[in-house]
Image (tube, rainbow, N blue to C red; front, side, top):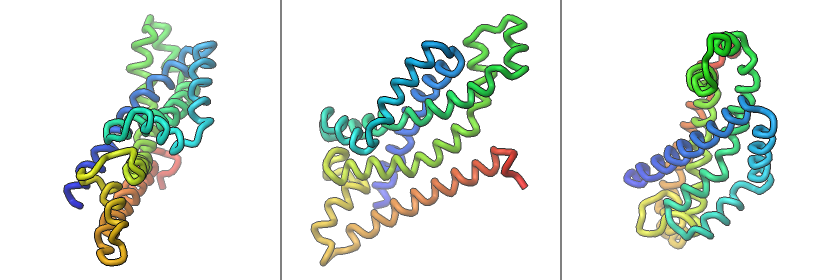
Length: 207
């Protein structure tokens, strides 16, 4: 179970990293460029929001084939629109601020403005969202592994361990109980971290 923690936590970190990179890029471009770029990119994100995330992840993982790597790709594909919407909203507020206009006035290009002025100012809500999504991602990957679309036995991933242990739950209940409790504490821990980061990084919530 302890060895499986390394796999489950690494999968959560990998998915959140992939989804945040893609979503942040899309959100920055859509929010800063505006116009038809914004419309096109946001309609693409709306397509992903139109499907239930777990069902879409199951369909993608099933099409790619059952493996842990394909499960990570599937969950990242259904997660990135959240970051795109979040970053786009922040950029829409920031792009007309005085410091951005001053950067344009001194001849700064779009790439420099995005990299040096807009991206750093979107990091606070982005880090909070990433902390919350770590727990959700661990549950999603474990759920795909539980139904056979993710990691395959004998990989010691928590979802696989719960799936294998349910066959012996009446006689060897601890095979399912302890991986489930480990997942519970991991998800609760990341949610508490996200809540703490929100309190620290949002000056409106400081007391």
